[in-house]
Each structure stands twice: as structure tokens, then as C-alpha cells.
Image (cartoon, rainbow over all chains, first blue to last red; front, side, top):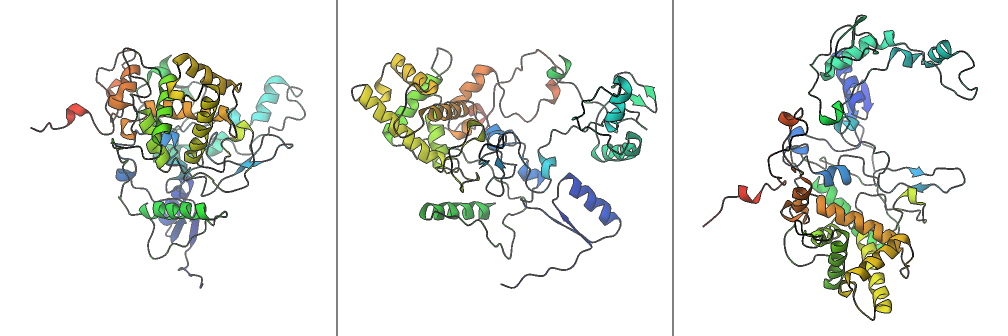
Length: 202
Length: 243
């Protein structure tokens, strides 16, 4: 069979989830010709997330309709070297995404920023508890990128998503109602905090 | 979507006739789905058993009534339709383990490696129920499971659960675990699937069902939600009554 040679593109993106979509958005804004390849189905909001059956827990939660089907691709699994690895036939602990939207289709929609100390964890713990605090075989390191460097990108992503919340630290000023331990933000969240369910106020 | 399903059905049939399975396929000319096609669930219908024999169904319903016994407020597993639910599930994609990884190697795995059987659930249930029937006829004077007294049924089920009672040629513990899971699923799933008849399970636990959203109720804590449950098919009293 002859290979079907498609028209040449500037960029090919493999996987059209959050990352692929944002990349495609940025690259097309720069005037590049972009094509994205996705292993799963195309999905339309109105018909693939319909308000009259999207609540179906059997179909979506128990039978994993939105996730990758293990017959498309799976992994083998074992806990220890002396065991025999076997295929995962149905998902259990983790569920890879499938289709346009990727994990963004079924994520928990929480976009935490890491704390400034998270980026320099080794330095932070050593400064706080002394050089002998971390065992020798503990391999945690600093990331090599700091909160300050990532801050504008956090901000850009939050404003792209329309993230809701109450800022706890605006340009160094602690704000009432927010997380006082968070890294400083350059401006408030783009949307107001949502109402809190029962579980959140216990 | 339809194309995908048909292709899978065809490959499942092909698998039955061959031991190897080729997954590679070429899709040409159009994509195997249609934009805005949607894929709503299709309601189960009352009628004859689609997968179980009458004897198998009688056993399954009797087990369902021990897993979820009836009480004065709520029907048990049988009258809630759990047997119908499981029958329709086994006759459909679930029974064939459709979408699961169904190729080799097949080895008896550890518990935490999950389901490793070469057979779909439909075939496994057929084996389990035949083995249970055989156990009953040997140890209970030829009586079917459904004819046993409740205490005898419970002893047998507890024996399967603990592994004290072994079924010939099959894993009774696995059977117990699977049927408890399936009966419970049928009891609490939307009535569209054949169990949870008249939303009895949801009424029992006060679950309001497939409502659009609860935005007005998010910050009203510890208040009872006043509306009755609703299924994906709506409610009986929403239908236009004819005549």
C-alpha cells in the first residue's frame, strides 16, 4: 500500500489535551500552520457532555467512558521485581485520558500554584533544619526554576482558564480570606471564589 | 462512534473463532465518528431474559435478595430489578469485557493485578452459576440455590466469601466478590439500566438522582433536599398520561 503523504505543516502536535491546545493556540497566533494528532475521538460539548445524561455514574465513573480504553493501549504491572508483570485489563489506580481535550475532559479542575519553597525544597529544608536533616539517600533537589520565574506563566494560565479564588498574598500584602502562605500574586484571581460545599467547611 | 462499535463487535466475533487478535485497522475516506452525533444510553426493556437461562436467573435473583434483603420500606435486590440489570449487562458490552485489554498473556495474577481472566464476565458467570448449581445438588439433596432456606443461603454465600466453600473448577471467592459488586451496582445505578426500579435505592438513601445541578444548594448545609429523585428518563409523573 502506498503511504498517504499529507501536506507539509510547520508544526505537528501529538496529543491535543491542555498542553497541546495551548501550544496550538500560541503557535497559530504566531502565524504558523499547525496540525494536531489525537488518538481518541473528537468530542462536542453539546452532545458528549449533555446535561441529561452526563450524570450517569455507571457509564462515566464506573465504566470509564471518557478514559483511554485498555484495548487501545495498556501497561503491564507488578509491585516487586520477583513478581511477574501482567497487563492491566481494566483501569484501577490511574486512568489515562483519551480523545480531544485529553485529561482536561475529566480533571478535577483545581489549579494550585506551588509554594515558593516547593521550587527550592532542598535549600529550604536545609536552611530550616540544618544540613544533616535530609538522609543521604533522599534525592530531593531544587527544581532549577523559581516561583518568581514561573509567576507570570501561572498568571497567564489562570486568566486563560478563568480560575476562581480569593488571593491570599497580593504583591506581598496578606489578604483576608485567602491562603496567607501562598506566594505573592501580581493581581487577584480573574473570578471570585465559588461557594463552599459542606465538605469544605468541616 | 457507530463505526467504532461495529468494528469492535466484528473483532469480538472474530476473536471467538480465532485465538489470536489483530487490532490494527485502516480507516479511510471519513472519520469513524460524526460531529454532534451524541450517544445517549438506551433504556432496558421489560421482557424475557436476554442472557441468563431461567434457572440461572432464578439463582441470581435469589442471591440478589440475600445481598440486599427486602425490608418493609424498600424492596430487595430481586424486586429492585438487580437480576434484570445483570442480565442486560451480561448480554451487552460488559458481558464481553468490551474495551478491556483482552489479549494474552493470561496468567493467574495477584489480587492487586486485577481481573486477569481470559473470559468475559458473561462466560465467567455461566461457569460460576453452573458450579454453584452443582455444589447445591451435591450438598443440598439436589435442591437449587433458590430453594434453600435463607440461613442455608447465607451460610453458603459466607462460605464462598471466606473461601471455606470451594466450587468445582472455578474460584468461588471471586464469584462472590463479583456478584456483590454487580448487584450493588445494579441497585444504585440509574433505573435506565434495569435495576433500582422506581428509584427505590435512591429513595432509601435520599439521593436526588440525575438532576441538572445543585448550584442553589451548595451553601445550604445540613438541610434536606426537598425534591424527589429523578432518573435520566425523568419521572413517571412527568409523563403525559393518556386516556
